[in-house]
Length: 152
Image 1 (cartoon, helix red, strand yellow):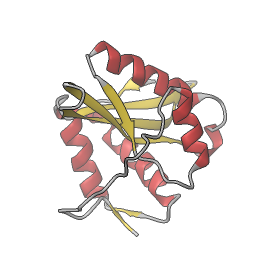
Image 2: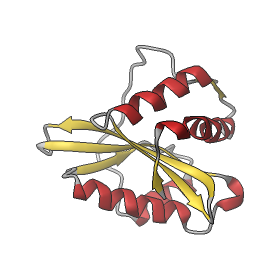
Image 3: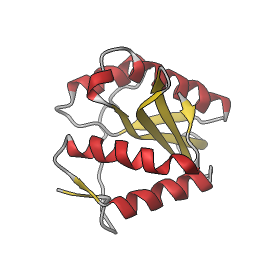
């Protein structure tokens, strides 16, 4: 896995498009390009990595950052984790998440969170492998103030 750079944006958007297509979402490519450009230009927002296997880009990870009063410091959110179907079940997602976890520790992040669908058992299994767990008694609520990068 390697840290992404601005010259990787086209590859990242292609991977994101493939990821979103799995959920039958149509990606707003210009919005996705801007989102990657923004985060790659400002590490206060987060970090992006490309998952590679034998020199081929096969996935990506996006981690965004926020401050959490509960932890008295930065909280990392695994915003996207995607590995192309033909490279799955080879430990790449787990290896990527372990690297993300170690990186987050190294920069002083106090907690890592992820939003995962109730019916997405494979993703839940991968996240649990690195120690993420459901928080009892909590539920994610959201209010979209702008259009997302996908159309259902």
